[in-house]
Image (tube, rainbow, N blue to C red; front, side):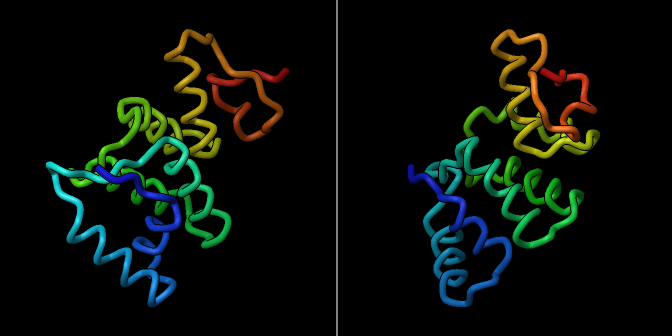
Length: 131
């Protein structure tokens, strides 16, 4: 198995750089299989959501669709996929960012009642409380 960096996924999704996108497309489409999937870590998923939002101005719904597609693609092995799905559901229903939702879901799974934060958007979720 081979790990995928955020920038490879960004090129594959956005097709914004002709040379790098072509390489990303070829790699993902010819080297990754159900039996030999590409590994995508929690960090990469969180970075991807942030980059698509901040650098590409993708709306929340489009980011959610991209993450959903990644989570169900058999050629990808997602770190902590169960929590990633829960984070995606929280993200779709809350004002917090995807990374905040993933963080809160991870903390909850580890036994936290809630996560403290100063992030005003995250604080709108019951998973967070102000410090």
